[in-house]
Each structure stands twice: as structure tokens, then as C-alpha cells.
Length: 93
Image 1 (cartoon, helix red, strand yellow):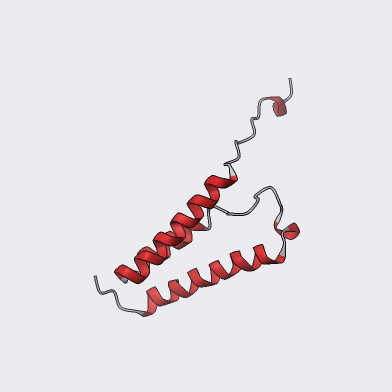
Image 2 (tube, rainbow, N blue to C red):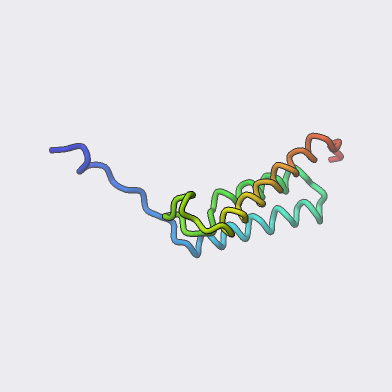
């Protein structure tokens, strides 16, 4: 009996759930940053949004269309900018 027969593949999360979670975490991060002025909370939720890839996860990074790569990299650049703001700006709360 081979060990490959015992290994179960993890279940893939359906794409609509990923899109919903990505959108919800992104909007919550933007809301907390703009409305509450909390850079750290906004950064946390915007960073968590990237965990839920809104595009087809079965497609490798090298095979993705340019607009998907650009979107995810732009999101990451925004998160890095927020991280720099969090370090530079004094904590007010």
C-alpha cells in the first residue's frame, strides 16, 4: 500500500467566497483607515484581503493575465505604503 493513496487533497475554497472575502476585507480596511484614521487596523485588514485571492487560484502566477498581476501587485504596494505610514506617523490612540 503506497503512501500516496492515504494523502487527501485539501478542498478548494469556491471562487465566489474568495471574491466576497477579498472585497469585504479590502472595504473594511479602507473604512477603518479613512473613517477611524487607524492606519494599523486598515493595514491589517488590507493585508488579510490578499489571502483571499479574488482570481482563479488554479492558474499559476506565470500564466496569469497582466491585469491580474498588476492588480495584486498594486494592492501589495498600497499595503507597503500603509506600513511605512504606520511607522512614520505617531500613534494617536
